[in-house]
Length: 251
Image: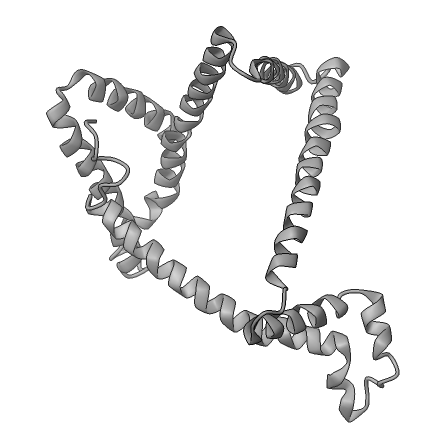
């Protein structure tokens, strides 16, 4: 019921924003953004006791409602992408045939997806969806990442050129880590017994130590800085201080 209400409210807000004067749209967007942030902030900081925090029981329902509201961005994205490809076909731009493939592929996937969902007894719907998704999309996706592997190797080659002390240290650490992941590297130190005091010098042990101690400390430092930046950006959006995405232009 709450999800249906969210859908109705979303449609109503959309048409209300389109009907009202432009000077009133910004205050309305600011108000809804602030109220949404207030709900989750108060729910988090208030005590967990239901007597002091009546917002918790509504958190799941509001979360589902936000998902419904956010899902409105998907058809808008599809519409925008379709308009761009339609313009390419109409103007016969370079590579316009790729836009034709886009429309054919989208129509086929949508057709067979609905067929599988609502006509599951038909073997053609299920078979068509599996053919397009499992035997066309998945291999194409794997091929794309396989092509990217060559660029990754090229970037790694440029990064591992030993021109400074830092580059030499990074190359040595990367070599040890890679040797610790393959049987050849483990074979190099297999004569060192796991029960001996020198077991920590085995390649796989050194590789694990680099990954779990040195690398993890650096990763945590980077994540800590990223989370501080994300918190600052969230506060700017919540308080409508961010001008880069919403209010530089007339809404």
